[in-house]
Image 1: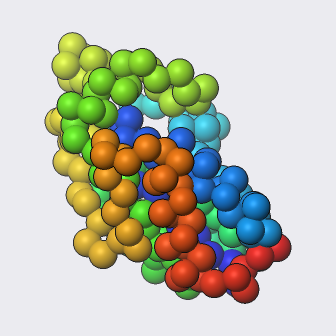
Image 2: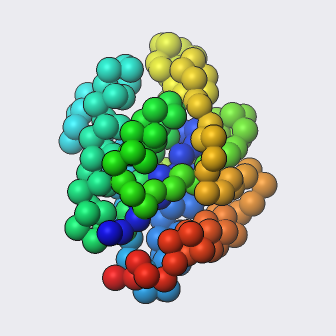
Length: 183
């Protein structure tokens, strides 16, 4: 069975950049990883997202189940998704035997500044501005973000560059799951 690692943190914390860079390091170590980016998957599951609690329940449950199916098929998975409630990540943990969380911690101010200049392909644009203007539900602003209780590691992305962050993440993942998961 393969492993799954959930990269969680506020929008704009650097999850996608760090997870992608970590995947590249893993590949250099002959460990392949499939990235499940929620912003990309959400376009299929909820093409006109409302970001309600009910919609989040469906989206995060689906994401965890996708990761479960992949790990059962021998595919290592990185999940790149905020998952603002612990229950979403805990649900995935309960169905994936080899599971860990990496918490990409970053101050809300830095996240907001990054989000304003983000050029991501799949992620929604200007979510922090939208939350202020239209009352959109944004984790860390007007919807709670529940930090992981016992993550594999915490990466302070406002204090460490993406390359060093990815190296730290890759080292922790390899230490936890070992080389046995190369594919």
